[in-house]
Length: 427
Image 1 (cartoon, rainbow, N blue to C red):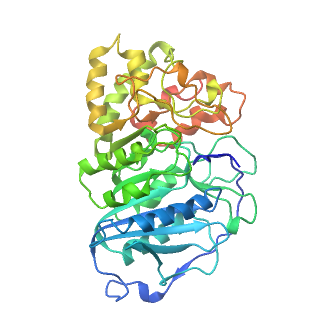
Image 2 (cartoon, one colour):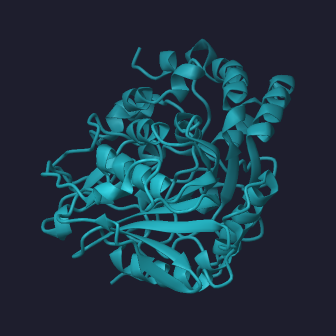
Image 3 (cartoon, rainbow, N blue to C red):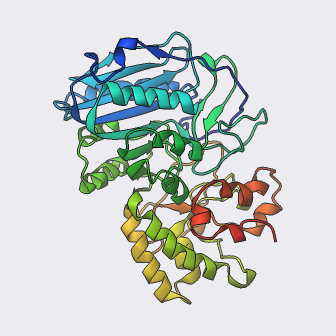
């Protein structure tokens, strides 16, 4: 076995038959006695673990249960939906050091946790049964930022070195090497049907990109996570559980600090907090810089720009640090416009953190995909949020998937909000 399995991995995807979980009819209805007393905050962990992280899920659940001894749970709920290998999905709550399965949530057959309708039904059920003034969500599993397939649920029988958004379910009870993902636009549409979340923590890789945050801007007030890869052990729940129930902006930073302060092989992962209400203003300022970046049909210089994901090739770099890209290319020639943009950026990405003395983080164990030595990671460059920038090299890439980067990005809203689409398609 490899020492670390990052929350991002190659995949096989096929169509499968979905089977539903059900809850007792007594659980539904405003006057139903099975609806629990209203709390201040309900935190939901959506644990998509029917994949190679199933063992890690068990470890995390034990840690979460133990941390609930000291968590502020007197007037709050900490609930997890769990879908692991070789077991039926279930819902559990945590308190006083114990994990208690909810007997009112029954599941007769396995189902795909990445299916949008099943995700909605599950989260809506939890919000109904565990009512609160505030809701928060932790997305646990694999993720690949904005990368997307054509379908609502990625369905391809071809092996790929790249991934498709959030979740991944290997299929019912891991019966075959199937891989089913949910695209970010579909994820946003699913979460938009629910009561709004105060924050979403991404316990998964590459989530903290502007494209994802923009899709989720109506779903939550803050996103917290890393633009880079997340080691399989995930966020440090022993430290985070006591922080999860405070919903001030300052506490969002405390949660980010808790994630950052965990070290693996002496390394920290970069982390940031995005305030989603500021994204439209950032889009407005970004459009001006984008036009400068691509004026007269030129392309930005990317060779030394901070990047967070790569398949090991130049064309595989798709997630560049948003702040560094504009700083590297425009600070000298367009300082005033850059500083105005930076103010909007700082209002949006309200907190970011990296270890400047040792800026490396754990990356894909199947190969040294990130070349840290080409990146001069300094405070004026690091922004903690990635963005896709169209490049001609993608159109002629050897990988058929990479050749679609400049088109697939247009399935998300962000490039249209900043006028990027005219630079994304081949001329």
